[in-house]
Length: 270
Image 1 (cartoon, rainbow, N blue to C red):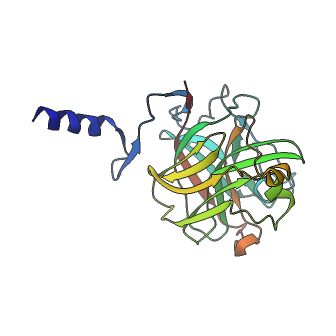
Image 2: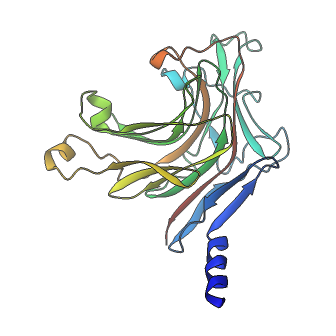
Image 3: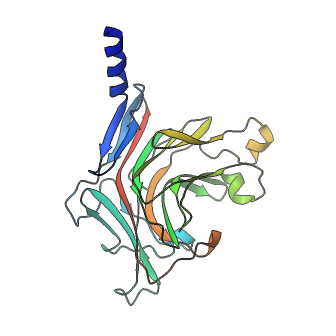
């Protein structure tokens, strides 16, 4: 009986229970060899902006996800302990030629890390054109490019997509490496999306279950071509955008899109 009690206690302490009142989600606690190095629970007052010690607004760039980024308080704010990122029709800023205003925040210049575990609790919508993401990024120049997508999803497709983009995959579409993965999922419900990033591999999880792996090649020539661009610090990005027709995902500039982030946490080995 004592052994059974010990076993049950170990099981109970092995999980962190998170509830929003209607559904319960279980996330495995991090092993003892890991320590928490960054977190945000987004518990600021309603209507406030994210913690300026941790986040800044991402700048607008001429690429799909960032083409309409705005500093408007209408597209990034805190509500009921959640970070709200939105894409809205541009009806309030006539001097801005963007068709929509979209929200994106980043830890660039505030927090970067190399290797570790990341989890983010998130839910979004399935409107045509929806294109939100939680991801890691760093680009020193075109020849030193790395991107790890913890989670992104596309319109009505109902998939949780993961990817590891390196110099090789970025510069050579016919690179022959499987670096993108998709799993069917109801993204309108709360899920915990995670990665484990090490010097040898990147793995992705949904609600604690491993769903994909990307490994560093053992081939010297493949490595020389840039298959593994993940040995330097990355920063975090959380954003809501809309598609431009890629993957058949066309954004509707007359609709409002919204993604909610409950929390994000980063652990590293001690």
